Each structure stands twice: as C-alpha cells, then as structure tokens.
Amino acid sequence: MKPSDALLPGGQSPGTVEAAASMPDYGALEIPARDQGTAVSRAEAEFMYALVARLKPKATLEVGMGYGASAAFIISAARATQYTQYTHFAMDPMQSDYHDLGLRNVAKLGLDGFMRFMPEYSHVALPKLCVEGVKVDFAFIDGGHRFDDIFLDFYYAELLLNEGGHILLHDAWMRSTQTVASWVRKNKANFEQVPIPMKNLILFRKRGVDDRAWNHFRGFGTWKSLASHSWNTLKRRLRAASGR
Ligand SMILES: C[S@@+](CC[C@H](N)C(=O)[O-])C[C@H]1O[C@@H](n2cnc3c(N)ncnc32)[C@H](O)[C@@H]1O
Image 1 (cartoon, rainbow, N blue to C red):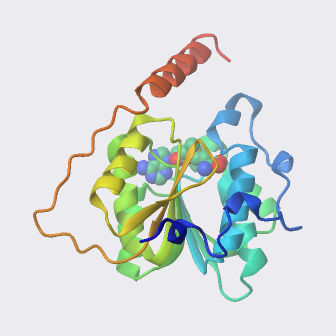
Image 2 (image 1 turned 180 degrees about the vertical axis):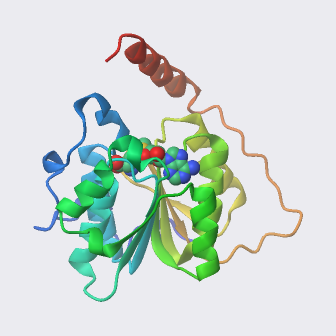
C-alpha cells in the first residue's frame, strides 16, 4: 500500500472540502452550556461534514448519539450527496439523560426520517445490526469511553463496514482510545490509518478482509497519551469539583 493510497478519494484532505450550503448551523443546536464538552466541537463537526460529503456513504453508523451534533453533521453531509436511499444508524441507551436533545436536534433539522435510532447499549444494538445483515460505509465511535467499550465498538463496526469504508474514533486524547488505535495499527493489516488534520479524531480505512492467522497476536500497549490523558483528567476533576 503506497502512502498516497491512504488519502481520501480525490487525493485531498477532507478538511479542504468546501462546506456545502446544507451544512447545519452548529450554533443552532441545543446543547446546554454546562455540557458543551460532551458533544463534538464545532471544528470536529464541520470536519466530519466535509469528510462524509467526500466519502458519499450509502449508510452510516454512530455509537453514542448524545446531543446529536455528530448525527446532524453526518446525516446532512450524506444527504447532500446521496439522493437515493440512505440510513444513519444511531444508538444511545441514555438519551433521556440528555433530555432527548440528540433526537430533538436531529428532528429540528428535518433529518430524523433518515435515521434509525436504537435506544440501546452498543453491545446489544451492534450485534442486532450484524444479524440483520446491515452494511455501512462510515462509522463514528463516541459511546462508552473505556478501552473495552471502544474495542468492542470497533470490533462490531468492522463487521458492519463495507470494504473501503471508514471508522472514525473520537477523543484521541484518551489513553483508552489511543490503545484501541494502537491495537488496530499493530494487529489489523486490513486497516490503514488516514492522516487527518484533527488532533482529537483518529480515522481508519478498511482496505480488505481480515486474513490474520488463527493465532495472530501483536502487543499493542502505548505510553503515548499518558501525559495528555492525565492532564485532561485532572482538569475535568477540578472543573467538576468547582461545579462548573
Ligand atoms: C460523548 S457523548 C456523544 C456525543 C455526540 N457524539 C454528540 O456529538 O453530541 C457519549 C454518548 O454515548 C452514550 N453511551 C455511553 N455508553 C454507551 C454504550 N455502551 N453504547 C451506546 N452509547 C453509549 C452516552 O449516553 C452519551 O450520550
């Protein structure tokens, strides 16, 4: 695989794609001020819009709908380029804890008709989609943030992903996310990491079938994000302690 093959179709970084008129206004999404850090940021949402618009997926998937920021930008980008049947599969067992704002934000934009929402944990919803024979071209993983949550989501997302499809991981600052990414890089030769200009996102492209031997295993521990993870965790604890 040549390095140039790792670029997106068209050879451009997704960040360079012009924002289309159908891109939602991030500021119009209802996200409580105290919880802004839970949703993807405006820069991340706009990057995802550009990425999905370039990939032109027929079906997309996301784990962890939260405030619906990611869903709004994924669906509107896919709709801007796909006029045939398109479905976004979204799951979140705790949408009511978010006052259904994810569902409401997507509905307010008139995008709910393109979404199948599953109010379940991903370890329940993703196997169901596998049994149904669902296939997607793009998956965004932003649900549970422990290592095993992300690992499991990646595992099932791969089974649901068409060849040539992409998986995007959020929260690259976390050691759990970094360790899953390291496992992919070291063990999954059928994936390649696509360079992107976003520090908190990691993008992988599925380039073929998984043909590892039955006993294949390569260690995948990483120290890389130890400092940033500890620093961010401390900041969050201090913020929570001060009630902000
Ligand atoms: C960081 S928020 C997602 C934010 C969302 N991407 C956005 O832009 O608004 C994480 C979400 O994942 C959900 N979640 C946590 N564990 C999950 C699991 N095992 N399966 C599915 N969703 C999960 C939480 O309820 C929460 O809404």
